[in-house]
Amino acid sequence: MDLTEEQLKRYSRHIILPEVGGKGQKKISEAKVMIVGAGGLGCPVGYYLAAAGVGTLALVDNDEVELSNLQRQIAHSVKTLGVNKAESAKQTFEGLNPDVNVVTIKERINSKNILGLFKDYDVIVDGTDNFPTRYLINDACVMLNKPLVSGAILRFEGQVTTIIPNDGPCYRCLFEEPPPPGLVPSCQEAGVLGVLPGVIGALQATEVLKLILGKGQPLKGSLLIYDALGVNFRKVKVPKNENCAICGKNPTITELNDLPEEYCSI
Amino acid sequence: MAVKVKIPVPLQRLTQGKEEVEGAAGSIIALVNDLDKLYPGLAERISEDGKLRRFVNVYVNEEDVRFLKNEETEVKDGDEVSIVPAIAGGSVAS
Image 1 (cartoon, each protein chain N blue to C red):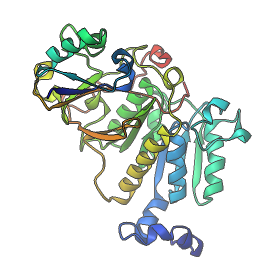
Image 2: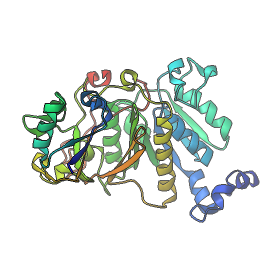
Image 3: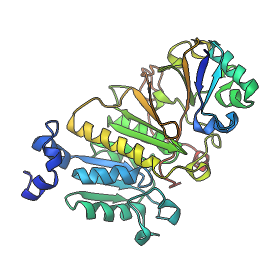
Image 4: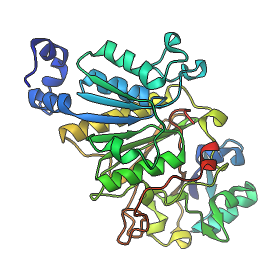
């Protein structure tokens, strides 16, 4: 499929970059990206990937837009209050770029449906708000050998890392196990600066585009920590853990399991 | 010059909102226990029975101490220690 006149114009600032060009833009238009969570992180990630012309964007979210979301979840609006978040974001992204095929999955992701949902996608983006889903997404990506761009935010701090299974550490290599329920507050309890997911989501979208283009250094083997108040970006090393429960030498996790629900109620 | 310790957001309420505190050179666990005297409750959030908790990472400069000598890793003046817990926020879709 060649780029049309209109597409050449729309993506001209990409195409002029030697690292992208017509070839790279075609790769972007053929890519299939799955974003789990159409909230604080999913909105900016999807927004920029839609603008970039990613061919297929899947959005997974079973929640509805509420007024308290609009402080940071920029793909939603007062017009979509009460609408499913994936659906609301789809309307916004299609308005920005009708080239993009936005697939909505209005389900909660779990150990039964995750492999089927992920299998046809090239890159997975984690924009979820709870540990059980984070570990489940990581484990599914390791099993399916799918690259995963993970982002997380709390108050004034964000974390980003890119996981390339079999070629670097995974989320369990980084954090061996989730904190017990109640120890780490959720955004709902602790708050989050509205622009913070924008910063972290834009970094995640950048990582996705680099993976699609095969350009630059992916953020693998490192965790990037952004501290908005101190204006610091810090990178710490994440070695592959040989004893990792999912990607180590003798994995103990051989099938997907859902963590107990109480982990969700942090 | 002392050891700088970066306190993550979820633990800053134990350090009177300070995002960076200072401690003395020595082992990581001694540093954590020392800081606990000034900021009670800190050690318990990071360690249990003298061992670092598995969902909190501690870095000396850029290196994860789990791949050095864990809680026995020695830090010296001028080192920067970062305490990094897993965080999960993204959307509030739970």
